Image 1 (tube, rainbow, N blue to C red):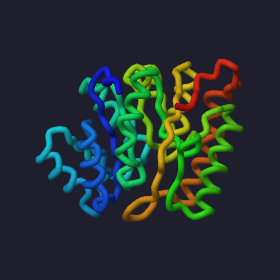
Image 2: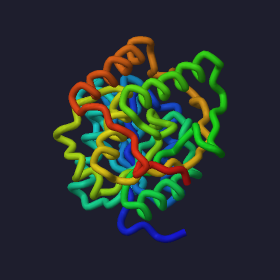
Image 3: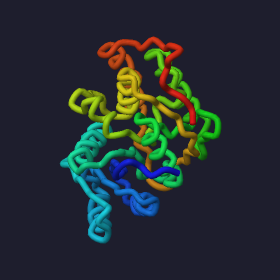
Amino acid sequence: MSQPPGPVLVVVPTYNERENLERAVHGIRKAGYDVLVVDDSSPDGTAELARRLAQEDGGIHVLQRPGKLGLGSAYVEGFRYGLEQGYELFVEMDADGSHLPQYLPRLVESAARTGGLALGSRYVEGGSIVGWKWHRLLLSSAANTYCRLVLGLRVRDCTAGYRCYTRALLIAIDLDQVFSQGYIFQVEMLYRCIRLGFPVEEVPIRFEDRIAGVSKVSQGEVRKALLGVLLLRGRLGRRRPSAKDTSKTL
């Protein structure tokens, strides 16, 4: 596997993930990458644990925010931090154990090689989901179909939250223009990437349900995401798929 063209930062947003954080951070560090924990003042002491881990390891960084400000803004702040610090590749990764560290090198290599976005995909050949009940599988599948139809996308896993961006891509997107919060943030970033003409490569992963704690996906978040896709189309327009579609499967 080729070496990435510069340092890699894995951004991990947290809210009440004390039970899972240490395992996730150690997995990232074992893979050889720096990690930034962006905590929204979790009442369970997640930030305190993150700071203790950072004191023991210079490759761990912590950004504590004043309250629960949303997934999208957490990633944007994390990306801004990484851009200022000179990182070249930026990974989004959950703290709950659903994103396995073993896939980090493949995502990083894919983004570095293509110069665009690498998606950890559950819905391409070789990808899978472990531990979800049928209704959540149906909801996720329907949400991805909805995104493809409304926005004219060919990517199989539009809502994937395990992904890697290049520095050039984040600069081209212009983080000041990103308006989505919650889980629709993932779709907006993907859509902006494709509209800018950057390549998207789907890397098959095994997604596992969280190890401990409670999922943050509520019915309210689902409704916001559905409306957010329509808002995204209204602001940026619908993309017309063509034979020159830049997305592909690894």
